[in-house]
Structure formats: C-alpha cells, structure tokens
Length: 448
Image 1 (cartoon, rainbow, N blue to C red):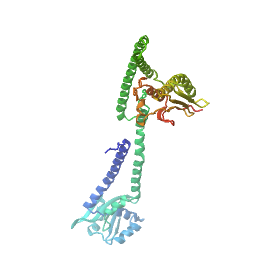
Image 2 (tube, rainbow, N blue to C red; image 1 turned 90 degrees about the horizontal axis):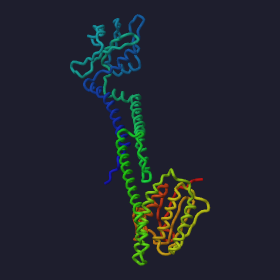
Image 3 (cartoon, rainbow, N blue to C red; image 1 turned 30 degrees about the vertical axis):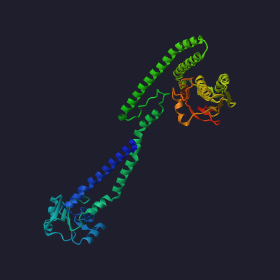
Image 4 (spheres, rainbow, N blue to C red; image 1 turned 90 degrees about the vertical axis):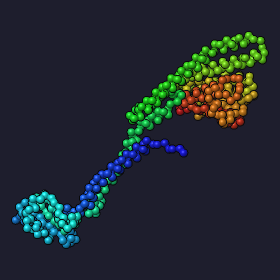
C-alpha cells in the first residue's frame, strides 16, 4: 500500500491551527476553572446585588439615604422574600431594607472596619448567609452588608461565557487563526516552490542551472546546497566523459584513415569489401562521437533559420545517394519560409540523419518523403517495415541498434534527439500513412 506524500504546508497549517485552538481552550479553562472551584467549594451570594443596592440609593440633603429600587432590585425583592441589606457610609449614615440580623443592627457603624467578608450559617458551612463588600461611588465610600438574596451558581458562568462580547472575541480569534496561518505558511514556502521550478529546468541541455537560495527557509538551505553540489559533481563527471569520448574519437580518426588507405591497396575480393565496410563503420562511429561533443549547443548562439531552406538543401544533397541506393525521395514544403531559432548546420545534420536512417533501414527501393509544415514540423516518412511501438523510445538511446546493419554505430538517432532537444523541440516516431516509419521533428516557430 502506497502512502500519500506528506504536505509540509498542510502539516504546518494543521499543527499551528491545532495549537491555537488548544491555546483558546486553555484560555477558557483558565478563566472558568477557578470560578467553578470557588462555586463548588462554597455557594457564595451574588456580588452583583451590591451594585444594584448602591444604584438604587439616593443621598438626601441632610446626608441620609433614601431607597428608590431599580428594576433589577425590584426583581430580587420579589423573588427573594428573605432578602435584606444594610448600607453605611463613613459618616454613619445608614440605609436598611428587610429583616437585618440583630447583631448587625446594633452596631452598623462597625461595618466601616471591614472591607470584604463572607458569612455562612453555623449549621451549614456551605450555605450562604451574608456578604460585606465595599464600593466607591458618587456618594463616597460605601459599605454594604446583604443576605437572603440570589446566590452565585453555574448559570452565572453560563451567562458570563454566553456574553456576546466573549463569544465575539472567540469567533474573532478563531477566524484570525484560520485566515492568517495558511497564507503565512504559503508565503514562507514560496522559496521552496521556486526551488521546484528551478529543478524542472535542469536537464542535460541546461546543466548550468542551479537551485536558488532566495526565500528558502533556513532549515532547507543545507538540502538545496547539497543538491547544487551534487549537480556540480555530475556536471564535472559528464564534462570529463565528453572530453574523453571526443579525445578518443579524435585519436581514432588517424589510424582509421591509415587503415582505409591501406585497404585500398589490397586486391579486390570479398575480404577487402568486408574490411572496408568495417573500417567505414569505425570511421562513422568516430565522426558521430565527435558530433556529440561538437554539438553542445547554446541557445545564445542561435540565429533565425528557415526550415524550408534547410530541408530542401539536405534533400538535394542526399538525392544522389538515394538514387544510387535505388530509393525514391520526395520533398514537400510550403512556399513561404518557416523560421525558427537555431543552428543551421546542427539542424541539417539532424535531418540528414533521419533521411539516412530511412535509406538504411527502409529496405530496398524504399520511398522516402520529406515534408515541412508551417507549424514547425518536419516529417521524414517511408514505406519500409517501420518501428515497433515497444522500440520507439529506445531507438533514441546512444549506441542502440535494432538491426545488425553494418552502417553506423547507433548514434545517429541519439544525435537527432540531442540536437532537437537543445533547440527546445521534440522528436517522435509513429507509423506513416504508407505503413513505414514516420519521424517527426517539432520546433517552436518564430511568430510574425
């Protein structure tokens, strides 16, 4: 079973969003748990009543207080028949309501010595009895003692966290997390995407391309550096191999030429002709190896060339050879030029190799057709045996030969593939309408 590759962006987004959610949950618990513990340990009276009492009190001209219950206080009075309170100020002015306990009634001025207190019934330590709280108001500092009213319970917690402001804060933080974290991660990984685009440009024809360090996360720089160093080593090895092949081919040309000269002096016969074919094959191999080295083309050196002119010249040059071999060659092209950017000699060599390949493998009296199209396609087709579909990729491999023909070394089609690829084009093989092989070169046309 194959495992799907992990998405770094998805993993980081999920991880950070999960952490943010955990922080929000922790924040909520941090606010709720102490409150719940207090409520669980002791059911205290609701301190909000103190503010309702002070809001319902008015100071008279003589300094005393009068009570004008607010709507909230009226609800408490109706809901709790045993509700009572006593309020005093620093000048011992007193406001009472309900059945105030006798000890408090006897010495109400003593409340000014208490800033905050909770009282419970001696029979039940968890049962709320009374609270004392101090408040600063527009009437001065006030001390309020109250009992018999509403107690704090878990519904208060629900009301607190059901507050629209609290809910809005949670929604805002959650939305901010979901909307900001993925774009931030995407932006931080732009350098990685650029590295991927750089890597797509690397091939045998553009071996000087290296991965960019720009905007790459620090953690990935060692990987990018190691990859670039590996490319440097590969380039160095490829360059050494190319130099070796070129040097070997160059060194072979002289002894092969000497061998061919000496063979000419031998008396005619089957052995001489066989040796001449073998020496010609060696010479062709040396020349093709030199071509592979020499045609390391750079797009910077390309010029505007006409595919019609190149194809016509190649066909004219090879026509005598085709006629001598008993082949029929046909050339079809538009009247207007088909211009591309490239190296004329290299493109001529590629097209010539395709025609020579058709002459060599198409069989006796093969009909060859060279056709240029206005969209940059050049087709070389024949009515020979063609190429089986299972071999249509490997025929472009270096030194790969499908037949035991004495001509060539299996480098001709590889050379075609290399030349066309360096020109930004494609070469493919299919079945021709007449039943043989159809080689198609496709190059980007210069738009008028």
